[in-house]
Amino acid sequence: MFDYIDNTEKLSDLLTRLDKAEWITLDTEFIREKTYYPRLCLIQIASADTLACIDPLAISDLQPFLDWLNQPQRLKVLHAAWQDMEIFHHLGGGNVPTPLFDTQVAAAVLGMGDQLGYARLVEALLGVSLDKSQSRTDWSRRPLTTAQLEYAIDDVRHLRDVYLLLREQLDKLGRMKWLEKPFQKLSDPATYTVDPQTVWERVKGLQILKPQQLAILRELAAWREQRALQKDIPRRWILSDEILLDMARMQPDSPAGLRQIRGLSDEQIERGAGEWLACIARGQAVPKSECPSLPRRRKLDANMTVVADLLTALLNQVANDHGISAQMIATRQQLEKMLEEGRTTLSDDWRGVLVNDLFTEVLSGKTRIRVRNQQVIVES
Image 1 (cartoon, helix red, strand yellow):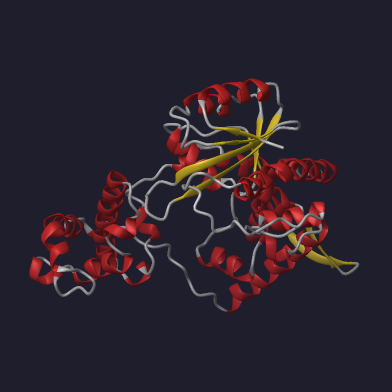
Image 2 (tube, rainbow, N blue to C red):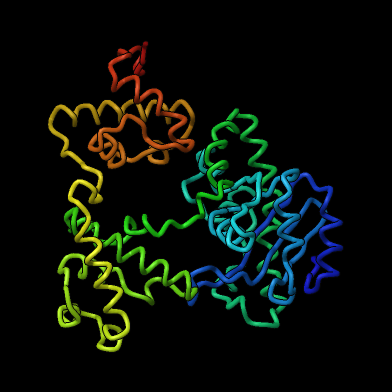
């Protein structure tokens, strides 16, 4: 059984009952096909003895819930928390609930698989097969059926036992510290703050552009992002990545030039030409020394290929020592990219905790490596 919370009185009563919980499990249902920000449609929440679905479409003021959620004295347990936290960051005026525990990340450091889905994790740990019949539900439609609500509440019902089992295994293996940085990042509001001046870096296909063209792309992408934010619509509805790339590459200086770009209608050009051409002009005016550039990657020569082989061997040894698949820590491609970019560290998450210091010492020549009893030994 679970409670369905659809008014402020029920919400206040629920929060009172949950107030002494040391931890809660949390999930959301949302849609975002037609909006820039996800539209929150349902909140599922549970403690050791309480289960509830909160209907944000029926409750006029969610602020009391957001204030309660942001209280730091209780742990919030989620699976694949990023999108849920993005929602609360937007609704909460830039605040993010903390502290957090992400069961997907926890499962990864226990060697259960990278980016493991919730249903697979529940089946692996609890032997429970979750109903998937409502996975395509339109959560904005009301009323929600019993089947829909049962499907939704399962996301927090079983998460309680999953959390306790993962926590037990992490404590047993001494791996809780591995999770500190990933969880801190998930709790950092900056993780969910969009900077229009950096969104150009996520435009697909930008590798074909030269630095001056990248400066133009930066202006165009920032304009598109700001417009999408203002209108609360998907950025692709403003202009597609392909059109941005063509504008940056062709650098038209008139509406006639814009008409040479495939995918732009006369109506779009009439509405947007002035702003697009201004973006292009600003990008053209950026001094060459200040133009953005992509990370320089150098092709590995024979010597660096040997170095990559060495790091791969060390990686395999570390993975074997911790009972984790080496592929979960890093692929050969990721190691080569690290070397191509001149880095000595892999990442700032739990994977980096395992290998960053080792890689840095090896690549700086501060250690020597030998084989003993068929094992690779690193000595300072």
